[in-house]
Length: 424
Image (cartoon, rainbow, N blue to C red; front, side):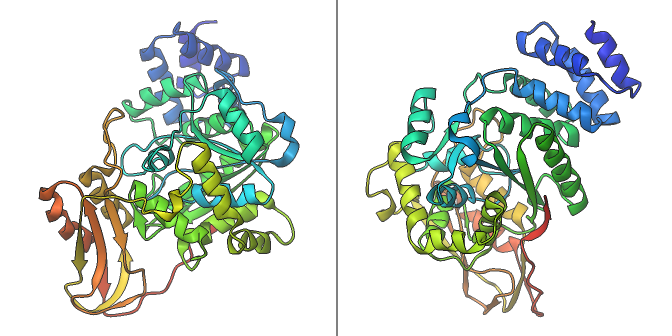
């Protein structure tokens, strides 16, 4: 078999066989296929698409290109979640502790942020002492003792995906729905969980800008997951505005902790709760999730996770965000909050140093924005609508950009639900 023929078949829009795709991924992994050949094949896929079978074969081959996590000793109790990336999205720090409090096993392998979306690992490592670099032995021991762990992927998990993603990033093929689905689901399959829920974002602050594209991606990932024998469902959720009032690495942890302490009247909990309900998929799921919060059991599980991974025992009694400076942002007119532009807010946090534009960029963990208003709130001129946390004095000028992201109107807008659809 020659990679030239595989490229030519896909260029002519012919369906690739399981053997052809496995040949390609094996060559990507062992280096026998040149990057320029993989780039050509990626472009052919981006232009001509893939069938469900092709997407499954690609996902399966990528998942098997490296190590996989064996969670079979836990039976059907294992759960996992994935978000396609958003602004102020700290649902993992709610979903994982809630599910662990309800007796599920939560083995989550996460990534770092790139661009406008924050990474779960960066947020956790904003907490003093916390490490996300866990050996296989430590990861498994923590699952046995605590029932939950959040760690970074090792270099041996889905190595083909790492190589192909780097190529997609520089060849304008990132937005291909089959390639996105295979990238996401290969890592979920390799992580070993039986039950998986996907949070597919759409809107200004998401990679999928419209609901139809998000639905198409969600449906494909659910079909691929089920072909692999996993119980997979998905939510389509709104990302026109930030999910949480807290945006920035350490701030987003604080926002999640507020929810775990019982302050659940927010969009963040609405989405987190919906994700938990999909994972439980049983009668009484809603009451069980609310109960795990109200009893303090979920908060206790999150504390246990943090302490197990290096934090001090009093980690949740101290401020997590420790920014050097902060400035209040005041409204320049009266009216109603008609919207908060998620992308504009995210770009401010990125400019403050709270994100990466390149993979080797260092981030400032304690910069960010705390919103004091939500869509539909009435504000007066000179009301404090946000607080900006920053490290460099010259960044104080970015407060103007925060204000520009908050739209004030004379008319009260309709409140939108954050969950736009369910794929099951």
